[in-house]
Length: 413
Image (cartoon, rainbow, N blue to C red; front, side):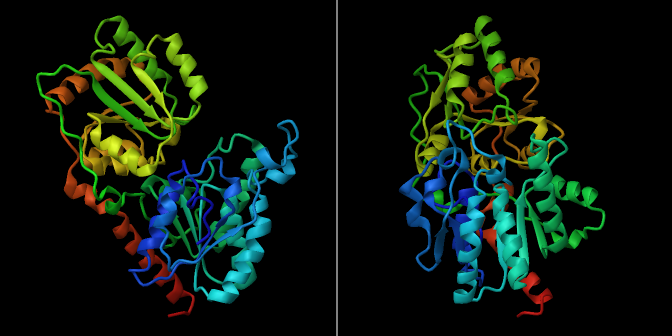
């Protein structure tokens, strides 16, 4: 399993996907061996999830540097050392390390996971050097017409993508529309080579957690809404949401006495802090630092409602936190395009008020009623019978079945 995001890496949902697969695949008959990067390359680390790595799973951390931090002079570095991405040096360490692991452990299948493009480049190289079948876990689409924004990087990404489509035994995606996109982009791609394995939640992460006791119903307090995780400035532009809150505050429909919105580990904090001050809502919207994962889950359980953001630019993607939100079982303010996969998921499971993230007027119109129903406890909740299908152990079974199919097709047993 070739994965950049693995404990002690912190701040990426990809950590949970690979970590949980490496745990639950063993019960499904597969023994993982993990090839990841040296922790020096991670911008943020946390020791809390290291204990979740199964002792029976060998983990090798190959040499890697971050070009922007380790190879730059006054913030500048040659583009050639940062293609396909800032962690391209990982390829130099991971390929020889991977060959040693293959000789030692005799794996039957190679699995690599995006969104770090170098991971797929390592998977491709080891596949070509050894002939082992390769499963490319794309999760979200690797390229779009205007992504990556840099044209040269986009060409390199598209080359890696074409190699995966041509050579990988299976391509794995987390959203149905991503499968459709690749089928249209590559007309020769057979549908049976594309596997849908959504992101999910792990029930064991919630063990011992419970919602805090609600205060007496007569006690007046602000409703607390929580957004957990990164808010990308382009993909999840929060400014229409912020402007709608500012309008509602000016109209006297929300205030710090009635509403508190916490943005936990949103990233870009200096930018957002300036916007919040300018709009005069920094007494309602609070930027909070990163905390350990289970503490975040406890915060979600304690909140009155949860906020999910996904712009139309990412209609083929679903934020990984959506599945954890659904397991929490609280009302969700879903700020997402009606045409996207995120909105489709929330419609299927229920429990959400949906408004387009870019629709400032629509948010202004919908938010007061959402808050009223949350306070009255009349807002619908996610359907637990639908939600349980996204448990990580079930997703690992699907991956194990996929790996077995690939092994049999390659002539193994």
